[in-house]
Image (tube, rainbow, N blue to C red):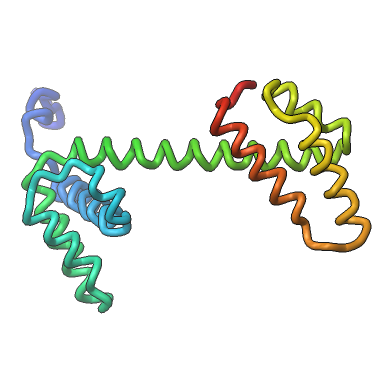
Length: 177
């Protein structure tokens, strides 16, 4: 028969190649590095059961030397090979999605504020359509204050006040589009 033919089932049973093991090791090390970059509050939300790993992460945060930090990150990667990284990865992904969602909501509010100012007093309806509970008079006064500030070349205090009010509306009534 032909020597070049290989049975596919034999490939599935074979251990991962050296390159694949190295990619997995580097991925775990990278995950460990992202754990060291989290704040204490964020790190407390990550399900890390291994006390030695928690200690290694806290030690790595205190290291300022680049070479020592690199060795500590390699050690963290080694420790992570001995645990199931799936819950940690899932928690990190969830944190990232929440952060991305918050950033998107922030940019939407900035865009709404800019649209309101662009349309002038008629732009108040944009906010009123989104949040019928909003105070129309306060919105109108902020738009007029913004126009006066621009004419006089003053700092944009109304700009900040409107953005704060829009954030307050979003926190109270949600994102009703």
